[in-house]
Image (tube, rainbow, N blue to C red; front, side, top):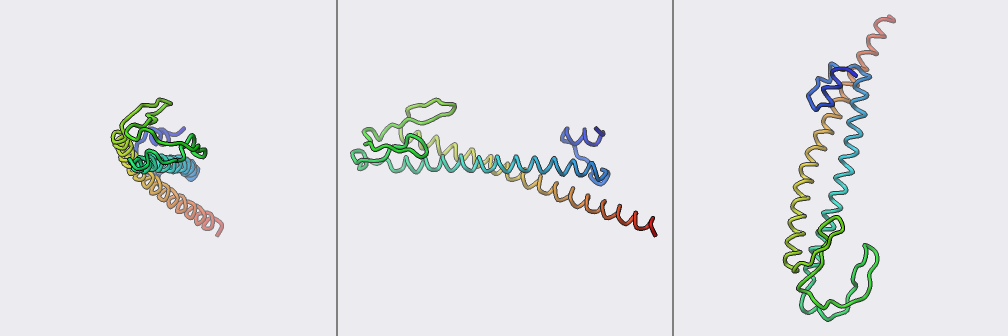
Amino acid sequence: MSAQQQQQQQGQQVDVTSLSPSELLEVRQQLNQELEHLTASYGQLRSVQSRFKACVEALKSFTPSRASNPTLIPLTASLYVPGKLKNIENVIVDVGTGYYVEKSTADARKMYEEKIKYVGENLEKLQGTIEKKQDNLRVVGDVLQMKTAQSSQGRRAQEA
């Protein structure tokens, strides 16, 4: 492994114009892999944020008038059973890693809103990282294209 590649793996800036075409191909492949991973993570975070928003919307529907009406209770994302809400003041919420806690409806709503905000902040940071990786990928692609063109011109000049 070259010193330039070691610097890059350590997160240091590397002048891509000083890399050989084969090294540029490796860098481009690595950037593509990182970009795919970051994009997948972004999608997962958006999904989590949507689920938290759905929880807030469900909590908004807990009104005294709905306490005695029949409703569908979710057991899983796609399985619901008929039931009635006896206590609309308290709910059981998933706080992570399989732990559930009873909270007041207001506290549960506040908890989910805080999670939505936290995930939103992380989405913004991740979006910035993705944009930087895309810019880096464009630069590497441009330099690789330039070096390939120079190499082709050099061969033509030698042949002539």
